[in-house]
Amino acid sequence: MGAIRAAAADGLITFLWVFCVSTVRAATSLVTAALQIQGVAFSLFVTTLLIFALVFIFGLIAAAIGGASFNPTATAALYAAGLGSDNLLSMALRFPAQVVLHLPLAIMEVMPPQYKRMLGGPSLKVDLHTGAVAEGVLTFTITLAVLWIIIRGPRSPVVKTWMVAVSTVAMVVAGAVYVPNSSMINPHSELNITVLPDQLGL
Image 1 (cartoon, rainbow, N blue to C red):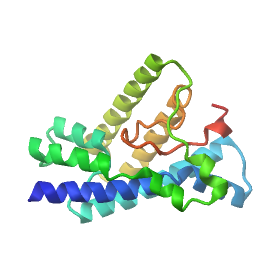
Image 2: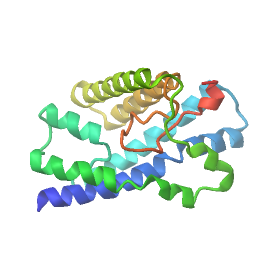
Image 3: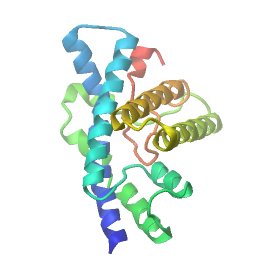
Image 4: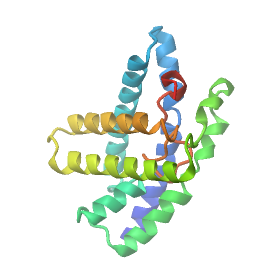
């Protein structure tokens, strides 16, 4: 019963996460336009702040509903590291819940028309094999960084969350040369965070 509850919680928080994180690019555009401050550095700073806020809030929500997770890569990494209380049965239930219940296209129904163009999913700027290697390396790097932050990082949850946000944005920027709108942050999500690749010239 506990495994079923965990899978249901994963499905719920995954849906909410994908829905919210898909708005980051549009939200960054709105903030920079409202403040009338242009430039790549400021856009990246705003994006990092938004990711920080989302990760922090979703961390609180996940803890409140029993340690739910919205990222199968994180779930697998924590299981492999021997952290948490998951077993093979709970993992077998949680993975499908995280994949099936994310419903990323729901955001298309509420996003204003002028921002729908910002909801594009991952695409390749290189050949398939290079793109696959790039995604693999980036996913491994961000997973390793997040594990280090969680296990060996500072005790302050605010500082940890900020470090996760900075690492995430750094990896997306690094991967934008190969895979714009990279899905490495949440591999099952087709509509994931972007960092304004058009402004970065990528």
